[in-house]
Length: 637
Image (cartoon, rainbow, N blue to C red; front, side, top):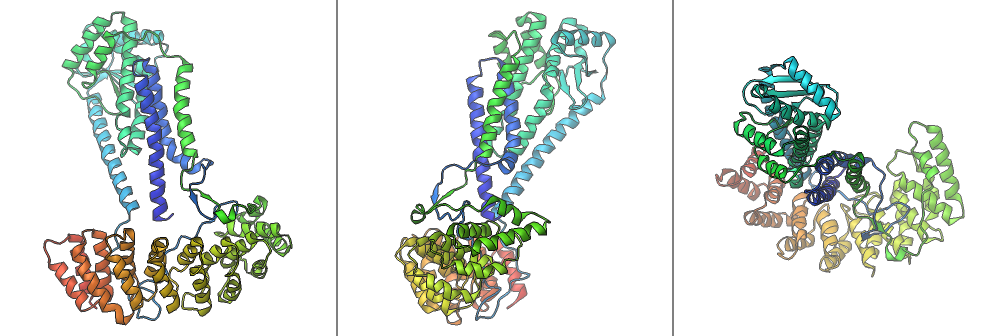
C-alpha cells in the first residue's frame, strides 16, 4: 500500500469513527434523563462498534457511493491512470555520471510511520496506566481475607432476589475502601471491613455490587477501555468509559434502593462512604464509589430512581441501532470513485467475464490458467468487438497476476485496429501488460490521430510503461502530437505518462509552454519537467522560476524536488547549486531543507560542500540538519 493510500485509509477510518461516535453521543444526550439501561446498552454497543469498525472497513463487502471525480473508466472496474513513481533519479541517470547516496543520512520519516509511532506510544502509556491501577488493586486484595459465612449466606439470598446465582467470591479488605467488582474470568466482590458492623449497610453494598455482577458491568467496562485504547486519539472516545460507568452506577443505585426501600437513607450512606473511602477506584474494575460522580448520583437518587430493569427488547433495540450504523459505515467505501469521462459515457460498458477472471486467478491450478488463456485467445481472435473488449478487460483486471501473456501480444496488436473505440482503448492499455516494446510505437503513432479521446488518453498512459526509458524519436513524435491536442484530457494523460522518460528538445519545449497554461501547469511541472532524467538549461530555468514563484502553491515544492532528485546538464549544474543554496536560508520547512542538503551532499562539491560545512558548524541550526550535513562531509566528494 502506498504512503498516500495509507494516509487516505486513516482519514476515511477517522471520518467513519467520528460519524459513529457523534451518533452515539447524540443518543446518549437525548436519553440522559431516561432509564440508565438505555445508556449502558448504547455505550456497550458503541464500544463493540468502534472495535469492529476497522475490521469491517477492511473485510466487509463494499457499497460504493455515487462517483465523485470524472476520470476515465474503462471496464467494469475503475482503470485510472498509473500511479507514477520515480524511475530515473540521482542514482540512475541517462547521459550523466551517476551519483550515489548509499550510506548517506536516512530520508525523512513518512507521515504514516509517524502516525503509527504516535498511536502506539499512546497505547503504551494508557496500558501502563491500567497496569499500574490493576497492580494497586491487586495489592489491596492481597491483604484481604475470605468473607464470613453469614456474609456469604446473605449475598446468596440477595443474588436470588436479583436473579443471579452466587457464581463469584467475596473478600473482605481492611479499612474503609470502596466496594468493588473485578475479575474478568473469576468475578470477585471486595467489601470493606467497616461494613460488617451494620447489616443494613452491608445489604446495600451487596445489592449494589450484585447488580453490577448481574449485568457483567466489569467485563463491559474492560471492553470499553479496549475501544478507548484503540481510538485514544479521537476526543469523542475519551469520555465513553465515564458515560458507561455513570449509567452502570445509576442502575446499581436503583437496585440497592429497590432492596432497601429508602432512597434518602441510601443517599446518606453513599455520601458518608465517599467521604471516608481511602482508596482510588481501579480503572478496569467497577467500584461503588467515584468521587467525581457522587454528587451527580446523589442528585439523581433525590429526583427518583427507576424501579424496574430495562426490558430485553429495549436493550436489543439500542444496541442494534449503534451496531447497524457501524456496519453500514464500515461497508461504505468513501474513497474517490470514478465515472466515465464525457466522451466515454455513451459507449457501452465492458465487464470482464467473472468466470474468465476466476480461471486466470485460481491459485495453484495451472490447468485452470491454461483454460483461461485459451478462452482469452479465442475471444481476442473473434471478429466480435464485444468479445474482444471483454477479453482485454480480463487482461487488465488480472494485470497484477504473474501470467505469461506473450502469446496474446499478436492478438492484442490486431485489436488496435478494431472498429470499436472501446476495444481499441482497451487494447492500447493491455499492450504493456502483455509485454509490448518499442516496436509498438509505429502502431501507436497510427492511433495518435484517432478521433476517440479515450483511445488517445490510453496512449498517453501506456507510454509510461513501454520501453525504452532513453530518448526515442518514435515516442517523441507520438507524445508531441498528444501534447498539441486541443482536448485537455489527452494532454493531461500524455504529461502523466512522460514521467522519467527522456525526450528531445521539441517535447521539452512544448512541456515548458504547457507549464505556463493554468489548465496544464501542475501536470507539466509535476509529471513532465520535474522528472526529466537530465535537465537541460531551459528546463532548469523553468523549474527555478516555478520554485521561486510565491503563487505556485505545491508546484513550487515539486520544482525543488525535481531539481534535487534528478541531475541537471553540466552547463546548468552551477546554476542549480547556487539557487538551492540561496533557497536553503529562506526555507523553514525541515523536510524541504533536508532535500537541499541531500542534493548538495551528493552532487555539489565545492560550493555545495562549503555550504554543508557552514550548516554543520552552526550551533543554532536544526540538529537533524547539522547531522545530515556532517554525514555528507565525512563521505567527501
